[in-house]
Length: 306
Ligand code: MG
Picture (tube, rainbow, N blue to C red):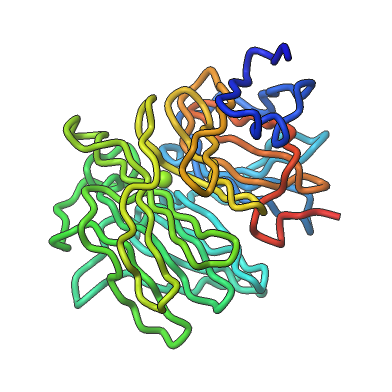
């Protein structure tokens, strides 16, 4: 089969997930560093972060891009909880916050053991209402994506904020944890290691953690990237993992086999499923946002569309 130039199939299973007639479409451009895409089906729009310009932007079919929030305090990762509320990470105040129905802001976490967090990067909310997020130092390493500061934490952790309000450092041995995502049944947690950004000796891996027993158990390396290091990731309803990479989006089967790639002409930072029927993959890639039709949908039920 002749595939379009933006598709690379490493395994026949990939051809069931993408359509050979699908196009890679650049739907917005002119930005510095795009991140944190999240789909709002109830508004038929995509929110995404433009971190250095301190803006959260809104893209809508036929209307293009408008400013959703500015200044955004260097907002990075965005998600929704099961009640539909926007939950997001801010490098400026170094916190994880939630927008309530009335527009007010609730700070969910800004410190651990009495010391400020580094700069929360990406966040996901599980079905029990727990908020899981990563806390690397990208927002305090320089003034590009935040405000330069000395870390107060001795490590760069993955945290879980339980429904009871208790904040726990559940994984503490990352160089720089970044994107994180759960399997559809929430028994597996995938976390991107992006420490190669400042230390070339750090392997570009996605680590797997087993949650079946109620504990976070290290299950080893799920996958190693061959082009750059991973940042944002999403899982589809069949459990395949879609990760950002320097040459595009890589898709891995639940057993770690790479199924294929969507090649993007810019470095990819993050991605999100959405669109009117849930079959669109939105890709934030450096100066632009792209979309591509995929023949699957995200694991998050609120991205499925109608
Ligand atoms: Mg990130």
